Length: 140
Length: 140
DNA sequence: TAATTGTTATAGTACAAATAAAACAATTAG
DNA sequence: CTAATTGTTTTATTTGTACTATAACAATTA
Image (cartoon, rainbow over all chains, first blue to last red):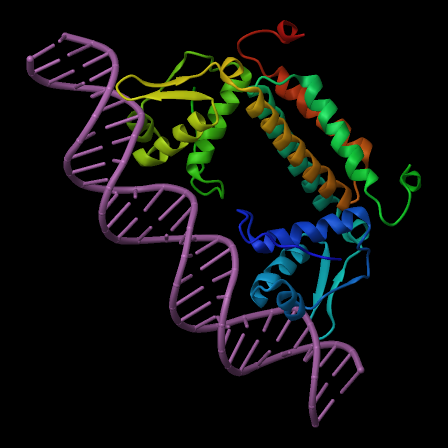
């Protein structure tokens, strides 16, 4: 798990950290039970402040991706098992909302419905192909 | 064209204004040649500062959605006709990037590829159905 | 007991968002 | 031509977020 920070990016550092860890969870590079580096050590590795990493971890905890316990550290959570149906539904609503926004902007720019759906399917395929932990066949 | 501002939202006011106008362009409620209210009058209507509206309009101008001329005002542009192929390609790249991000987060949350594609298709259909200016059949 | 870990507090710098008041420049209406 | 309207620019203030810095506190682990 190697993180790279772009200090010139408009995206806040703590969100860059958060996104890359979520990415690793998506691809299976990080799995439930895996330990994340401590707040202090990751901060030292990245050359950022301790609080910046702590904020990234706190976001991951609030989103259900990780659990934090002082003394023992931060561990990737079993999100599928720990999520309530309500939270799951909220996630789905947020996804729908973002897709709606993208579709509308695409249309405003003169793009076709077919083009949007094709592009979405292509990106989904790419996201579900990136799998360092196993073959795509495992997920049907 | 009625705009509503949520002053408690995390989304900046000028982006709320921008988004709702893009929304209107997408549905056809606003078309090329249509005039937008002046910076000062819209600011007065919404109860915000003149500069906030001006910034929203400037963003729309930079994105190719509108043209601004002092004395005459702000007018919706014919975006499809005025866009260069390079800009069009950049828009497509940005869309792909956002879809990629959403697909990865969906997978990280335990969602399936099929679910993502289905949801994207549904939102696209909704976006292309919202049409106050004509029937869906007009666009094939 | 000592080290490590997350947590909290305080303070300071930097930047963006929004507001405010005022003036300037180009276009339009009378 | 004149006056009103419109976008543009300048300067300044307030507010909130991001990030850094230092320090201490609390729970777990070795």
